[in-house]
Length: 238
Ligand SMILES: NC(=O)c1ccc[n+]([C@@H]2O[C@H](COP(=O)([O-])OP(=O)(O)OC[C@H]3O[C@@H](n4cnc5c(N)ncnc54)[C@H](OP(=O)(O)O)[C@@H]3O)[C@@H](O)[C@H]2O)c1
Image 1: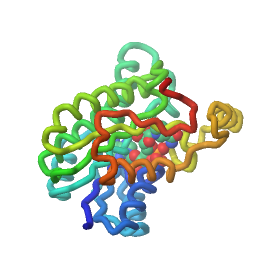
Image 2 (image 1 turned 180 degrees about the vertical axis):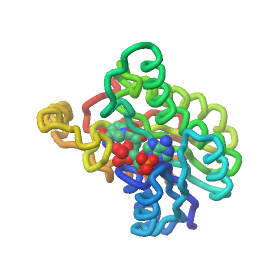
Image 3 (image 1 turned 90 degrees about the vertical axis):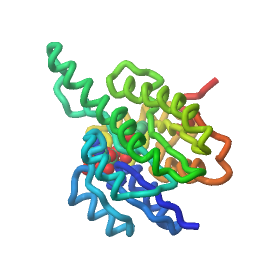
């Protein structure tokens, strides 16, 4: 039976691959992003519905929840490291602004979107948050925000589990073919990231889309409150 799937940050990169995969399976798919032109372009290419929405803006998120209605799968993909391309902050005001941007982008957006749609999730529904390998070495605001997202995911699982709902967090390693690095990835850095994997390759959006597909499948109904690492072995849990 066709499900309704909401993918925040579905206009580019990993989110686009996730949205396309659900759409190919025949699901109703709604994607969001802030850049309206990019979002509507992607929506028409993959045959999804588009709702322009900044995940960190409560009013826009409320309107998004109304537009989507009942749903089965929420994928909180919207995010990214807002420090990339930013001058190193000097002074407390600049540090506060930089940290707030990363917390808004990677923690608050997922919290607001989940809170807004929680009452509309059908029984058997699932929430999939997207963290980062950076959370394991959280020296940056980005890593700290993703670590907080993972902690919140575990707590939320206990809250919604009795309703027959699950929530997990996928933690990707380096994924290429995205706009994440905004053209700033060097060959040297890429080589180092690939060398850190056991598989000796970069991840790609389909690696994450396949994991999302599994977590949203009937076979994953007893998996909840977990961080699922998808990184070619660059970080292991033992
Ligand atoms: N690529 C990697 O190596 C990697 C590794 C670990 C984790 N991740 C995580 O994977 C997720 C997807 O990143 P990506 O690599 O696919 O990057 P990307 O290509 O830059 O895509 C990011 C997507 O998120 C949207 N977005 C960002 N902030 C948003 C906001 N406030 N409200 C709504 N949409 C927002 C963007 O659209 P607009 O800009 O138009 O809003 C875009 O659709 C992120 O959470 C990222 O932290 C990526």
